[in-house]
Amino acid sequence: MREAFRKFAHQAAVAVGSSPAFLIALAAVLTWIATGPLFGYSDSWQLVINTGTTIVTFLMVFLIQATQNRDSAAIHLKLDELLRAITKARTGLVGLENLPDKELEELQNEFAALQEKYAARLKAGLDKHHDRNGAKRRQ
Image 1: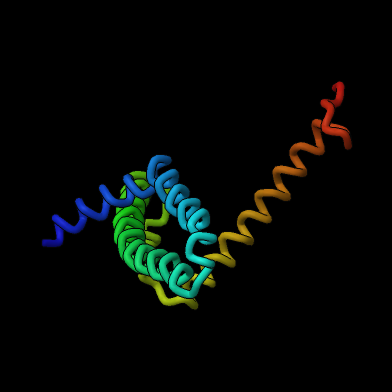
Image 2: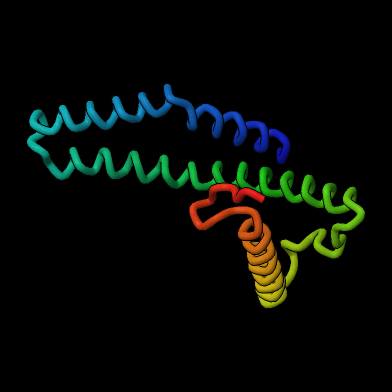
């Protein structure tokens, strides 16, 4: 059942994310708008679009979440494999998504500090060889 749902969710996400699906939805909304005068913009007329969009939204949340979960898992596996393959990489970062929020925040701060340090070194290196306007200095 799980594999059948995965295939269905994937196919549904591809289909619903297509331009023909958008055009169908747009046509439905335009048809609904066009029928407004015919039904006197009644409560029933409004209920049709509200009910329809609510049902579609409710079902799409589950399909989107299912495909997002699968994509996220695949990306994590690919990144984990890259971490394992690169000798200088910290393999302790494999499975990082399972860490508590506090530890993730500490790592974010560490990487932000590394980025600032790298940016400062890069700027210092560029300043040696470029003037203020970014043009190369003659040496």
